[in-house]
Length: 255
Image (cartoon, rainbow, N blue to C red; front, top):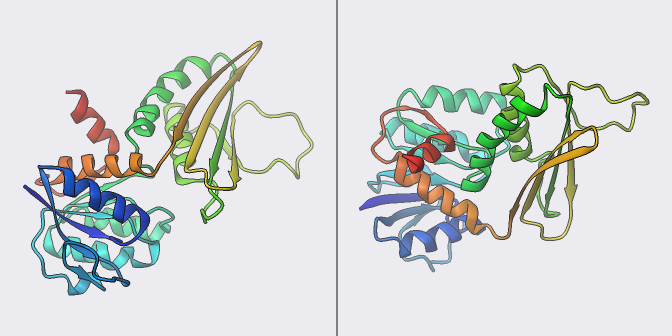
């Protein structure tokens, strides 16, 4: 039985994952971390992670960037594997995560969806074929009106997957309103839409002469991210120190 600590347990994703863990015979909720708690959870909840003295096998984090530093220190000190799902981290925080991964297993991903992470792999193959053939590359992402960051971390991850395969030769362009020129070939345009209750939509467009190839992913509920996080926790528990991502989980599933 894998014991889980849920950081941000009373947030929307925290509650989704808590319900999934409760129904999974391989998992159990050991504790939760959240500054606000009304006692409705069936596991102990601590207002700050430094107060948590419960033994566990893995921590899942869906919180905010402002508390990630304390959480990372906590996991590093205890050798507790961590599935880090919080986005919007600063460069300094990412460096801190890399340093902590020398002491414990950390899995960090811009998007926990298994579908998105499979798409990251497929895009590399598409880029190998279509970019040399002169196809222009555009990414359009749509999210709800409460999302703070733009473009989404997932959109950037999709662009990075393509650009990494192409030797980093492409420039990212987020706004063309100040430009009056023909589109250069070696750029990836990234556009963001914010509105309503859109959970998450990403389109990657390869536009060539007389043909267009589009890769699309739509999340209809936050459950897709929860399922990915739970799958990641199962994979990460017991792993040696190191920095992992969802591609490792995908590879493990494909074995």
